[in-house]
Amino acid sequence: MPSSETATAPQRGPMGLVARVRDFLNAFRDLLHLPRAFWLINLFFMIDSMAYFGILTLMQEYLHLDVKLADWVAGFFISFFTGAVTVFMIGFGGVGEKLGWCRGLALAITLCLVGRIGYCLAPGVGFAAA
Image (cartoon, rainbow, N blue to C red; front, side, top):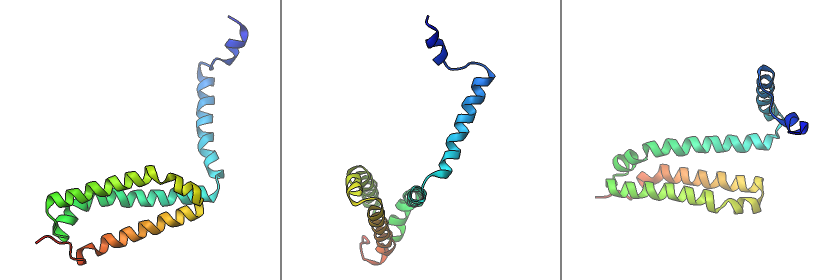
């Protein structure tokens, strides 16, 4: 076997482990040097994800008890909501690319705000089942 192949093989033993741990920690240290836009986008994504998954856990009871929808209608709306979120995530990524990150993020936050306001106003709109 040629010596060049053995030179590229990963190191074994404690020194190889130390180098791998150092590389692993350096990857996290490099995160500190990313631009502010990266952190803002991830912050908004984290907040929106917390709101989304928080809403999913309470949506069935809210639609049934507060909005007075039948269970099957509430289930339909929950399924429609989760499906729409998935379709928007998959299908509208290109729109965000065309708009650019600043206008795309502004549009996304505006749509989220409109949706959350509509969700809060739903009990008073009159969709309640008799």
